Amino acid sequence: MDLILIIVLSVAAIILIWLIAAYNRFVVLKNRIDNAWSQIDVQLKRRFDLIPNLIETVKGYAKHEKKVFTEVTAARTAMMNATTLPDKAKANSQLTSTLKSLFAVAEDYPKLQANQNFMMLQEELSGTESKIAYARQAYNDSVLSYNNSVQMFPGSVIAGTFNFKQREFFKTDEVEKTPVKVKFE
Image 1 (cartoon, rainbow, N blue to C red):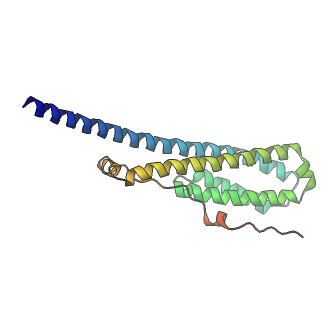
Image 2 (image 1 turned 180 degrees about the vertical axis):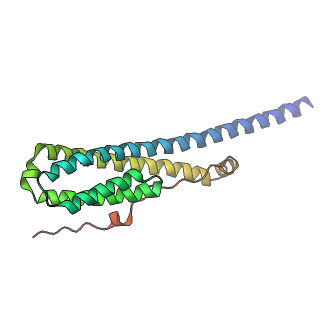
């Protein structure tokens, strides 16, 4: 009788330890996603802060390009007001598109291109864009690991029991997937 009790208690202890470890794994994966998202947010904020300086620098040379400045400012405001992941992804795409327009305007002004302040801001913005891309990739990798754990057995049982839901990937807007047209005139 004692042997059966020891075996039952051992099996129960093993199952309890496994449940705790599985639950803790979900917590770690969820926290990695939250951390990865905050890294994206940090880089988006950095870009957000660089844009007014860039606009002011370009304005000094291209005073009559008000439409571009208005679009960049509107896109920046939309980015600031976005709260959900899909809204931020959409606003990010819009901002990226308007920044391309701003740099296209800058190409028409050789003195601006030679301006040290403009060159520094452009380089900082370019570096920030690379960091955003890397942070997106890290976020999506974290979401993939988490979603796999939520969907695969036996993790799906734990996920369902403790209400761990699948997370959304950071997706690129369709506009950003279109090929860039290069014209030589």
